[in-house]
Length: 403
Image (cartoon, rainbow, N blue to C red; front, side, top):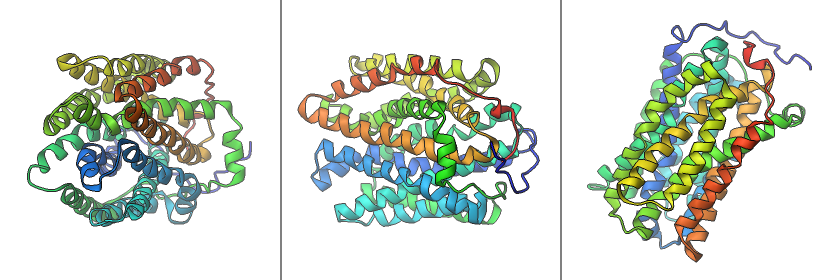
C-alpha cells in the first residue's frame, strides 16, 4: 500500500502532555452535539407549533443525518486546504450560525436545509478531531484520550433534556435555540483565538482513498456496528420524549427531567470504557456493549415507572462504552494517513442509518401501531451486532503513530 503521508506529522506525546488539546476538542464536540440533541426534547413543542405528525418529526432528524452524509465529500477537501485546526474552527462557527438562523425560520423547507447544515457542521468536526487526537497522542493512550472526547455525547444526552426542561419554563423553543446558538458562537470565537493542535492537512476523500478504505470488509462491519450503537442512543433519544409524553402520558417537563437523569450513567461509564478498551481490547468491549444495549433497548418498550428509569440508565451506560472502543477500532483498520478518511466516511453513514432512518421508522410505526413497537424493533436490530464483531479484522495500524 502506498505511503500517503507526504507531510510532517506532530510527534506523539503522552495523554497528560496533550490533555489541554483533548479537553478543548471535547468541549467543541459537546457544544455541537447539544446543538443537535436539543431538537429531541423540544420536539413535542415543535410538533405542536408546526402542526406536524410523528413521521414528519422523525424526518427532521433524517434531514440532519443527510447533512452528516455530506462529510465524506467535503471534510477532507476542507482539511486538506486549511488543516484540521482550520476545519475544527469552521465546524464551530457554522454550527452556531445555522442554529441562529433556525431559531427564526418559519418555512419547513428552510428548516430542513438548516438542519442539513447543522448535521454537516457537526460531521466535519469528528474526522479532524479523531485525526488530531491520534496524531498528537501516543497510541498506548488512545483509549483514555478518545474517552475524554467521547464524553461529549453522554453529557449531551444528560444536559439537552435538562436544559430544555429548565429553559422552557421561561422561554419558547425558538428562544432556547437562540440562546444556545449565541453560546456556541462565543465558544467558536474562543477556539479561533486559542485553539491548538491539528496543524497538519487532512486527506481528500477522493475515489482512490474511498476505494482503499471501502475494499476492506472490516470497514463496512464497523459502519453497521456504529449504526447499531447510534440507533440505540441518538436514534432512540430523538423519539423518546414523544414516546413518554404522547404514548405514556408523562408530563413534558418531568419526561425531559427523567431522560436527562437517566443519561448520567453514560458520563461515568465513558471513562471506564476507555480504561477497559486499553486493558481487554476493542472487540470484547464492543461485543459486550452491543449485547447489553440490545437487551436493554428492547426492555424500554415493556417497562414503566422506576424500572423504566433503571433500564434507561443501564442502557446509557452500556451504549456509551461502545464508542471509545469503536473509534479506536476504526483507527486500526487503515494506515495512519487514512484515519481521517475512515473517520470521515464511517460515522456519517452510520448516523444516516442509526439517527436518520431509525427515528423515521419509529415515528411511522408509532402512527400505525405504537412507539413501543418501534423501539423494540431497534433493539432487535442491535442484537445482531455481537455476531458481526466476530468477523471484524483489525490490523496493526492501531499501533502505528502518524497522521
